[in-house]
Length: 355
Ligand code: GDP
Ligand code: ZN
Image 1 (cartoon, protein in one colour):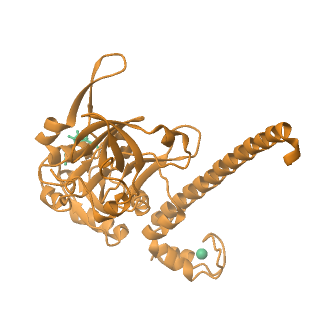
Image 2 (cartoon, protein in one colour):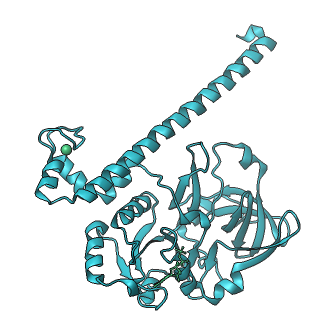
């Protein structure tokens, strides 16, 4: 195995080049368990923890699964992470709980497979949603239509998806019967990382099993003692395939809540954005304004009402997130001001002449 099999590229090489190679090794994060990481490098596999400074530095980027890190080994299998190298793509979700913070769950994915099932659960609006999610990530989306064995009108479904998919590839397949698996494999190149995104039950695990097969059983399971001394079997979230390429299979990727920017919407709904260019008012809400090209297209049927509703809903959600993000940064700024205020006061008290 070489570092290139793990996904190393000139992009990371350039970022790593300032580090002393006598001390540091680049390694890729294969699994994360809070602040414990499994890091794989050319010189071995390490259980790694974070350098204390990283934990206290609010501006530090903490590693996620898929990240390349700057590692200092101090034992055959123990190491410390000094830094996270820049990413070319990342998937984030809203942090669990009240705070509206961004939590990166996967990094450096080349291709993201957006999986839908062609059974009763088939839902074109959900595909739009995942496309928006993918648009902001930096990864290339490929649409997988699984369970083709359960679809009575395959051609009809595919053409419906084509209408929302832009230029992104669409692959109908069956994890159970094996049709289309070769087309899927053709999108996984050596040294590249892929991930699966889709609702529960669409067949993601079945597809991953098709790709990983025995390799998963061989290298996937890691037996470990948990804090209470029990044996737990956890699995690697990044898996190197025998045929080359890596599959990201982290629980965090499975049910991503929407997190994005309004620009991501423009990438997926370019038809609506184009129509909006011709609205009479720059800030047209496409509601009851006169001279609205979007309403006109809805009336003539050039724009599908469901598609517009889906666009409006996603836009509203993203705008809501935006406000929450703003509020979160205002709160943070206030907290900082307060702390500075306190600091100022205490310095003033102890050293009045300087102020
Ligand atoms: P996940 O939740 O997305 O990981 O979905 P799973 O891989 O666990 O699959 C959910 C269910 O769908 C299981 O019962 C699978 O056997 C079934 N399933 C997966 N792929 C296919 C397929 O291509 N055709 C059919 N008929 N069933 C499938
Ligand atoms: Zn309008």
